[in-house]
Length: 167
Image (tube, rainbow, N blue to C red):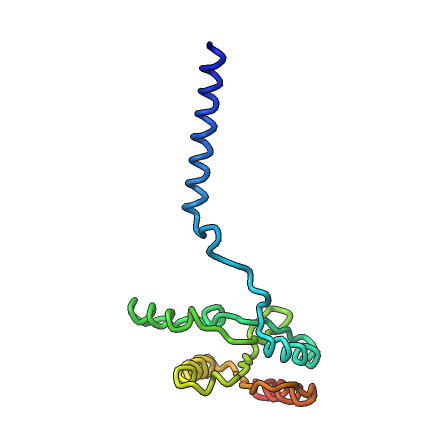
């Protein structure tokens, strides 16, 4: 009889521990089944352009994809808390398609936006104008490249070279 009480006690302790662990895991963020893994970080058009871009980069330059503007730009001091938060909100959910950086210290050199037909929509044009102004405000060049079926490496190399002649 004592063994049965001990076994029930141990089972009860194990169940309580499991319930606590389950509650902690459930409260730690993502619910099971809410997220899925995307097939690729880039669209087919972005992958195509990246395949031509990487080989034509000058020595000492690397490329990162889909970098948030908030990771590139900071908000100037001297704003009140509301203005500062508003400025951060405008950059924290936007990204640039490609960011060229100096390989030695990963300092941003220039951005590249790949423009497909969605960039003709009014809302997208407003977003693009904002992104353009953020880059200009920080004196960081931004190159817009129209999406194409294929890219000539020499043309991409020339466009990239134009970025470095202005920096």
